[in-house]
Length: 227
Image (cartoon, rainbow, N blue to C red; front, top):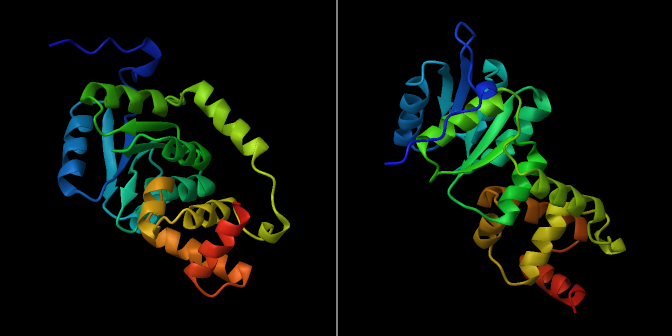
């Protein structure tokens, strides 16, 4: 079996330094337990809190002030990206790693826009995850600079805004486009790396702003714009 490559000297906490404080968010208890055992087995990392709920995590993380929050990408009541955005708006010093089973551009885009320091697939090897936590705690970004630059350019350019859509947020405009393509709320949630409940809230807000009374009317409105 191949051994993990040695870590760069600047990614390892020196002897005598304070341990790296980590918070775990995952709706599966066994996953949280496995992560805790992996991280605390290293000796220089301590798990200061954990949760299976996005709402609870968003409340507890700023109070605990961990160095790194490892956030599950998708949860029954939200997403790690939502938690990352909320936590960092309150305390930008807390670094976040999005841990997910999905690898797609929209998910990566959402993570970068939320201020995440890293985006890690759940298939990651234990040693690589530990190394990532250490590097993120040391202030390094684990996001590819080229990908980050592309995302920022995408934000800067953006599509021209139609006067009818000036009142909609970027997320609401994107959801409207996907409704026009015939996608369900669940499919939209998966595509945009959001919780289905969050999509429903966006749809309700979008309908109110456009003066529409149903999802069907929104689909017709969107399809006419796409012609």
